[in-house]
Length: 210
Image (cartoon, rainbow, N blue to C red; front, side):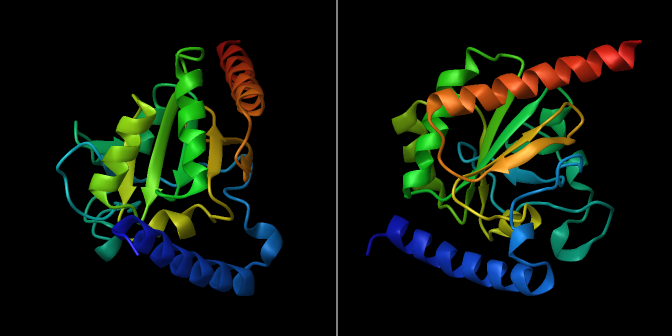
């Protein structure tokens, strides 16, 4: 088995454990991402195209041990994918994926929509992905949006992962706009969801301006 195949297998084991814990504590119906109206959990992840090493920071306050020494939203820089920084600049479409699996196809569809929706912040994170294989995926799909690495797979639990890919749609400010997309969509299906996100964001902005 190659290294990418092993990474996928290891993540499968992690996801089984996460699903088991979540199912016992919440029930299967809750394994569907962040509830609508709730804010996306903050995180700061190393960018796959950088040389930054380390786990994803998911701290919400200072000195939270393994979660992070400083709040995730404050961890910024050219080597970091900071989800707070993304939602500060527009609506967000976040894809969590397993590199080396069929669900990476959605990354290319997101790339196709990036020029069509320049106000939307398209981002992705590879769960348990290794840097070099993920870089190869970025190059193969010609991705120009940020792709982060989650070496220990913490976002699978934090985002109540239920599928690969799992796509979260959030308004500016980070509030989840609609239920996470739990299947690999067609380009038209994804375009429809992004269009609805943009329209909802514009309505919220208009309402706040009154």
